[in-house]
Image 1 (cartoon, rainbow, N blue to C red):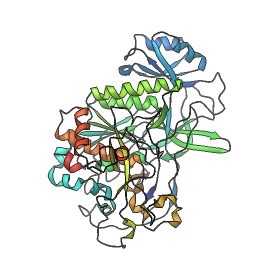
Image 2 (cartoon, helix red, strand yellow; image 1 turned 45 degrees about the vertical axis):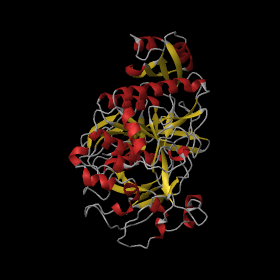
Image 3 (cartoon, rainbow, N blue to C red; image 1 turned 180 degrees about the vertical axis):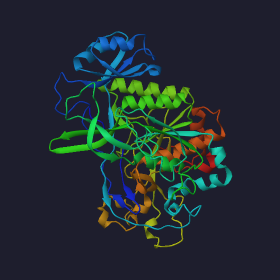
Image 4 (cartoon, rainbow, N blue to C red; image 1 turned 90 degrees about the vertical axis):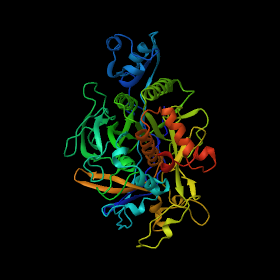
Length: 508
């Protein structure tokens, strides 16, 4: 099965460059090498009828010729590496509900254009890029800062399930209380040698026969993936640490690395990218829920087909793991996806379309931020009533809330500037994107503009964290209902859900 990937990237590095030009989400290969022979091993989800693993499940699976990679006891699921023949033997056992391939989710490619900026109007002198953070002001986060002390915010932790977080970034130092890696190719990075550091020097090479005893091999270079660091900065970049500010600077963060670096060849194209698999994501969700973290942010996802037998195992396992997290008291927030599609129908965007998840669509603003003269001490503010659905954002009945995800602004015909090549856009089109923290390498923190529902989701996760900090006994269902009831009504329920998340109204 092919999955429609859920991410889109528009990125800029201040002082180092602007990553420009949106690219539509692409499709990737299956879990085996593209040239896989029928007998070659693949990874499968084995979902039992019972919602816990039966006694002796690991030994039984190994007796059928499978290698157990992850045993996820609370949801009755295992990830195994096996030949198709062994997978068929597993599926015939009456205790097994379904066996299906483990799915993979990927990030898109990006392009770079150099740029340099100066800024004004910061909450503290150090936060010199705050001027560009229209998104933070649009959801009324500054009103919360004036009322709720950082110490009160610190009563809640938001788990970031992503590519890892640069914990030595000046805006994130001291904000992270837990470092966990559940991905297959585990390694440490950064000055503190943390397992969730966004460093990738190992990869899974799908161009080689899969070796069950040596799944990960050294890559020819080191990759640093900035996505998780950007998401973390939106949630809780601290006051006066670096140059930006998060929605809730007092919240604590837990950094989970669920992505692996992958390599494969399609035709004449060699791909070196990162991808997240079902098993590591499930394991991270279970761990965060068992540790009692208030909120999980998942700026990731993919499309599954409810008619496809290959997707049944994944659909069941995803539903179980989300219900488990909710039962443990953890709120799940996820991006709605970047395919620009109506999500109503037989295709299900996972995890955002599940009923136990807060699904977040992305907004841009029609306020012409690019018309502001530069330089100026004025702050670039998105005006209420000027919100638009970002051109890439999924929509539909499953969307619960909307939040700023970034767009390119609108031209004179009301069409997004993103529809044109970057050299035909106004010089300030990137001001409509979401500015946050990124990593270049272990000694070079930076700041970047991104766009995507990946950027919208952490705004809501941060507000959910504030709500849990103030109301620690509230259930996930109560938090979801409260966020919906306090949202700013934008109309068009299918596009924006119950409205734009409102930090000020919610955090009371």
